[in-house]
Structures are given as structure tokens and as C-alpha cells.
Length: 232
Image 1: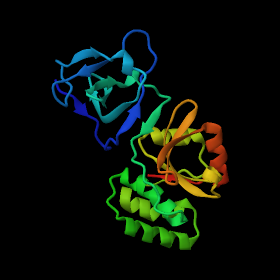
Image 2: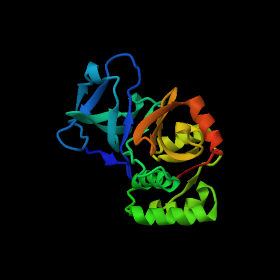
Image 3: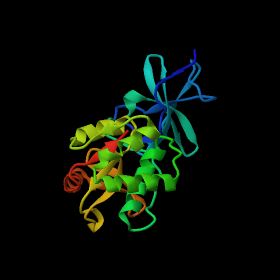
Image 4: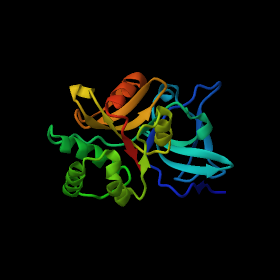
């Protein structure tokens, strides 16, 4: 009996952490990329049990959802029921803005968003679309045509609450936020990529790094950005 892969949505890579549960954590080891009835249980080594596991595939087998992970030289299938619901971080490569100009900040943030949806837009075409949008003097939702053309969907998260942002991240979709006061900048765009119980993770075009911020500070900076947010 072979596994059946969940369809309808390509699985962008993301990181998970294991729940705290009594007994041993385990995964299914396989000889190939599929789960079968001969797949064997293997204990998750204690030294990596609290670390992040990179997920690159989701499947359904024996009435359960399974996450295929890689961790250094280990790989296998983790049952979804053993994954924390309070942690998620998307594997979105950071793009550092080329200059301090607003258009380069916006281009870097939007490039991260679009590339996560496998867009092949060129940097020059993206900057041209952003320049046109800047002239319209509309908020992030004014980028709808661009995002729809590259991702085939749009999600308006303006003035949403943080729980709605969490749900979008759990759908494996990064979010572009306008923030104010971050890095002592009056206004800039960042790309929200994950959360845990206390922090949010984001890619910062200004620093070119994955950063983290407390929930309260994210709310404060986002409020200064007029609660603008968009995804796909």
C-alpha cells in the first residue's frame, strides 16, 4: 500500500518543531520517497528533538497526514499530530535591497513574496511595476494586479488581526507588511515568514537577514504602517 500525496497545492518548504509528548518521538524511515506498509519506525535522536525540521512534502497515509522532513543526513516522515501548532517558519530565502531607496526596499520584499510562489518575474519588470504603483499612490492592495498575475491569487490582510496572519502562515504563504519605526525607518516593507508563542519571524530587506520580533513590537510597528499587509 503506497501513500497518496495531498493534491491541489504545491508544498512550499517550511520548518516545524516537535510537540512535547510523553514517550519517544519517532518517524517513519523509508527506502525511497514513498511511505509503504513496510516503512519502519525510528526514534528521533534526543540531540535534535528540540531543533527545527525542514518539511518538503505532505502526504496522506493510513488515515493520517504526514510531513516529509530532512535534518542533516536524516530524512523520513513525521506524523502531523506530533507537530507543534504554535510554531511555523517558512523557508523563504532573504533578498537584501540593493540601495536605501524605497523602491529597492519594496522590490526586495515583493521579490521574496513572488519567488515563494515560483514566479519568474525579472527584477527590472518588477521595479517597473512598482514604479507604476508608486505613481498611483495606493496602498499595498494596489499591487493586486501584479500579485494575481504572478501567483494567480490574492489575499488582502489590511487591518487583519494577528491570528489571521498566523492562519496565512500556516497555509505556507508569506506576508508582506508595511511597518513604521523598524530600523529607525519611517516606513518600510518586511516579509513575515513565521511565528511561535512569543515571537514573529521576518525577512528584512534592509538588513538582508532573517530577524525576529515580539508580538507586541510587531503590532506596534505594523500599526505605524497603517496595518497594511498583503499575500497570495
